[in-house]
Length: 130
Image (cartoon, rainbow, N blue to C red; front, side, top):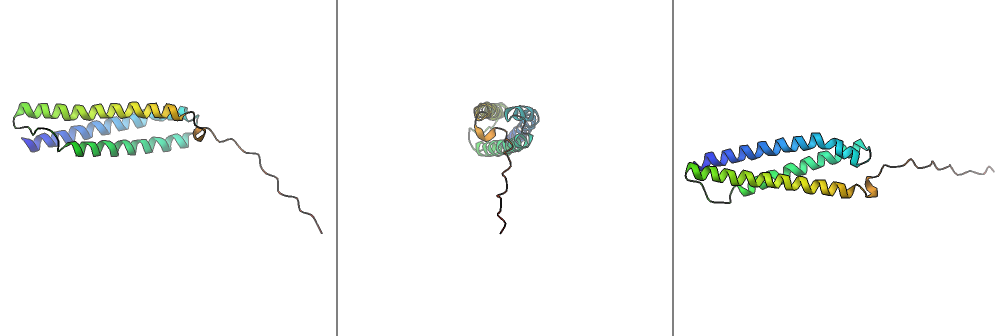
């Protein structure tokens, strides 16, 4: 019973994490482009980095929490085990999403994310003829 419960936990948590990650990546692109004032290259780069970080944190969390909690011996305990573990993963995903959105809204105002203005071209120094 224990091995099957762990396998179901890993499958469910991985599937939910991948589904949420893809949805955020796909639908977040428009938000990031707007947030970075049309700079698509920066928005796509940040979007990819957010996705990689999202996966690393969540898969690490899923792996670490596998060890903790009462080990299920019955079907009822197995369902409770899965419910609490998967529910905790879902709460983590929602919390991460909230804080990412908050951070992006705050970062929107930093000069780093403003469009780069074309600088006037410098004139070549005049040379004196001898």
